[in-house]
Image 1: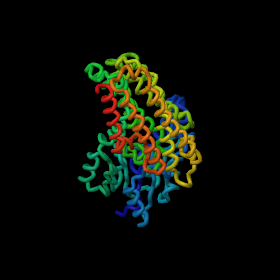
Image 2: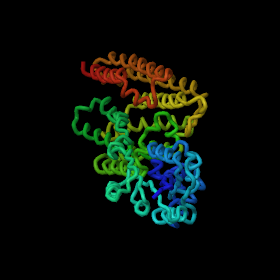
Image 3: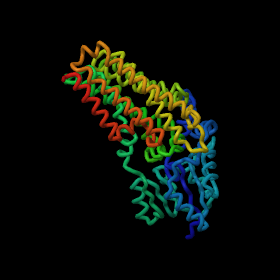
Image 4: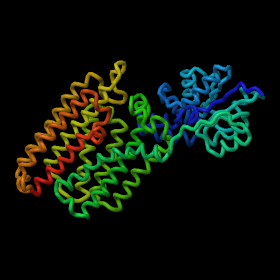
Length: 474
């Protein structure tokens, strides 16, 4: 029997994402209070919810994560004269936009205000088009089983093994595309474990107070480090869920697990919720109330940054600096150590400089036809201003360090305080090196990630520790 029709599912099949979830996230980013409207619509019916959300949200179909192998296969079949039908539970507005963009589909079947085109409803719509003729169906999930059974041939895209096995027994497998990576490895990658290095700042109060030889305080610092790291990873999940389109248009961020579609949005939501919950449970059970307060402020401010503050120029830089400084404050509260005003002043200047550096790198990497960074409050014209502000702040931090070294506090705490002057030299060397590197385009995205990979930066960090210990005990 000749099969002229190939019917293709959209979410999870042709694209590696779920458009309903993605459009909800985009609507929530516009205004978090929209969440209550969405819940009300879903309680009414899923089809109504999809229709309401689609009217308020635009999806840029050009940058969606398509299943390239399936797309190439469909283009080949189209060239052979096959009739391609896009059949999806996503709203017709999105489906038609994708169909127009790809230019290979002859017809589109999709959800509207009255119908959620899924499962048996989708099969009925397909039958109204193809009649008694046979068709091949491409799908990915258990919801597609009634259509796979009705189809004469099955195309699987990362489908359940049981469905593939059943189709093989009946000889109905046309193609089986398996492009998914290990969920565990991709989830861990999305947690950005390398970014946990930022939370080493929690140990700064323990180190500067020279209390690191006390096992109990060291244990509390380790617990605080774990809490902040898990909480930060949860924030990374939420940030990337809300920044999908902007990340897909970025030359390196488009490879992130959520932006690329390698991690499902549902696992992304699970990470955004469960990781902070674990962090707060540990903090409540094992650490002082003051630490819990700082962790709560960090979490709320981080989410406010993800939702809207990152797009407000200057405010975003100040918030980033505060988020870094909160790590140091958290480290002090975890072990009940009083923070030095010198340390706080030094930290603020350093972190404002690094925040300026992050934005400078982002806008410097913009293509010529894109003068403004998507989702940010900066354009290419702000590059020189950010460079000047960043270098000025890092120089100010070195000045604060020099004044601290000459203070009575240092004179009474260190055996050889004059050795600490080497820190100023190292600070000036490192800051000049990293800013010149950014100017030359040698730092791809995150300056902290660069410093962790950069052997010279690591060596300077080690020398910092050695110098402080030497000044204390020599």
